[in-house]
Length: 141
Image 1 (cartoon, rainbow, N blue to C red):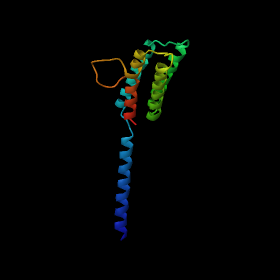
Image 2: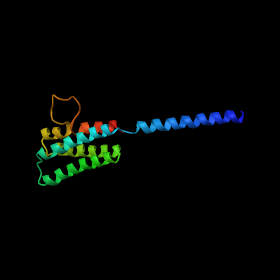
Image 3: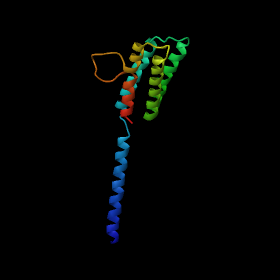
Image 4: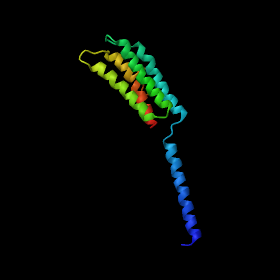
């Protein structure tokens, strides 16, 4: 193989590598609109947290903890850390399920459903509540 052919092969390889790098970068990048949609879903859940009744002596502390998990997920999205945001949302979900399923429930099944699934609404068929936020964030990973 002469030098010119070697140069052509090398140039083609470099171009192919660059193209693959661009495609990988594009696949891992969520648009601002997609992130905004996920953050909007988190905001809906954040607005629902103060409306639920928590049957525990430290309800204010529990409520603050739930809001903190949502704020942490929101912050992780701002940093582009979607996997970490998803983990924070799953932690929120686990906490609500634990309170609902405890021997002496600390949240009613209806209030838990509001936080987990969102309010029933004929206006939308999309998943809402924290589960909808998790699906949204997971779709951006």
